Amino acid sequence: IDTSKTPIGTVLMDEGGVKVTYNGVEMHGIGDTPMIYFLFSIENNSEHTIQVIASDASINDVMKYMMSGSGLEIQPGKKAAEKFAPTNLWETGIETINDIAKLVKFEFTLSVKNTEEYETLFTTDAITIYP
Image 1 (cartoon, rainbow, N blue to C red):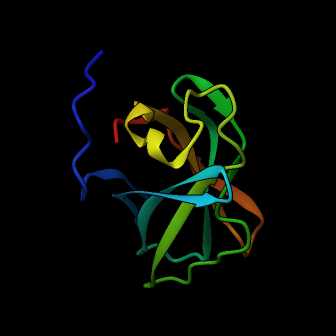
Image 2: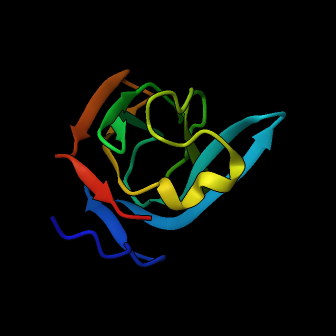
Image 3: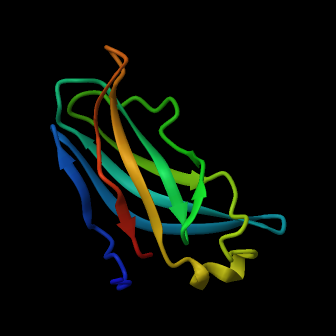
């Protein structure tokens, strides 16, 4: 497995006029509970109003439900800055804000939805980030 760091600015998807770029990771604590946010920029050069949803996600090979893209509609010709976050970090080895070095791998798929027609335009194969 190639676990070299994924550079900030890496284009993860460029398909159908939609481009998603990786912009890094933020980690914050809510009390004693750490929260990780994966940062992305999304460019919509398609003719559709879209949503980009992260799913089929795992952190350090532990499957997680992602809070992402819910409600953010990106108009044609517009850009968005988006944060995707797992609902929890249980079983990933990340227990406190100081455990950021234990974040080894984030894997997910992206689905691009046409919000005007309520249809999925496409879904990517698995994308892996080594933060």
